[in-house]
Image (cartoon, rainbow, N blue to C red; front, top):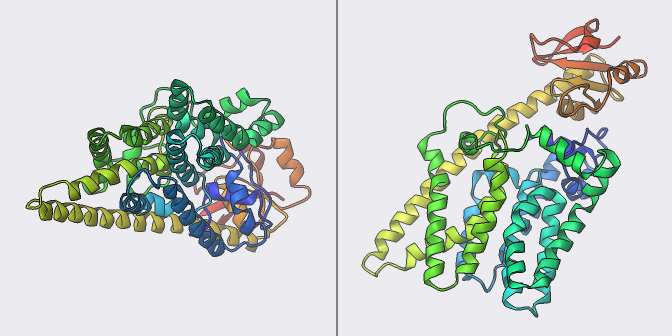
Length: 439
């Protein structure tokens, strides 16, 4: 797959391939710094994907290792396998996107919190807890706050001030750049948060559960989110998650170790609140932290189903669980294939449009505006700018001034109208779109 829209924004901040794209209010620069060791000197998407795939595997290993001593190793291995084989994990692990890294940070943070809470002398767990929270805040500060709320509540209730100071320090360290940038470029922290909410359609009471279900068929973004729900086979695992998590909680209570299971469940619930109840659209990647945190209790529940029944019934339960997991994997890989095919086709269209623009003389240094200007501009090596919309970063006068020193084109879908300032520009067909090229 070529780079997607959001990936283009993050990678372009550190890439020599083309000018940096507009960086809107909700975004944080953690992903840009994460990809900098490769993207700063190479424009190879394959190399970047390989680097991120290896790094995401290492991240998951370290996130699971934080739970050693809290659950048997086989349960942790099963939890890792369950999370790693979800189509959304495989799809986004090798992408330059923040949600997977919030998930890994959340997984490590809860495990290290439990270890530090059990042994106040375990300084490594306490420091690791703070670093894990910093990783989440580095990627998405607001997600980090929602995820650690139950941990902060437990620390306050138990009056363990070290466990309160560690995540506070992690949030400050991870979000410091985002906050400084809020005052430098957005007029303040409140203004940046308000602008981020506006870009996300306004935060409020918006039940997005059905939107998330509609996106489970492999759609990267469901905005607006209409159409029928995917088939029952595709959705079955999603409905099985809370049931298995509830069984995991029951097992934990029965074995007198409730905190180890109830705490990740509580963090999963708070991490999901903004994306299930507060926005009016959906993307499967938003819930990656929820899936990572649920993996531990779900794996514990499955281990119980495989080992608890009497010896006479155990072959039956093992067979049923094995068949269920095999069917689950088949569905995940079928959805993954569809998602990759759909995404790859869209990215190829951007590459074809960029090549067509080069053929008609729109070459670097150049400026693109209009429909899908941000990704196409990166593919073409141009700057991108928009007068209106969520990515508005230039005025009409600024576009007109740019036409005097470089090629400028306004992109529109077939049948679409150019912006008012481009109505006298020459329309040229480019790979299924129209480019209105300034004289």
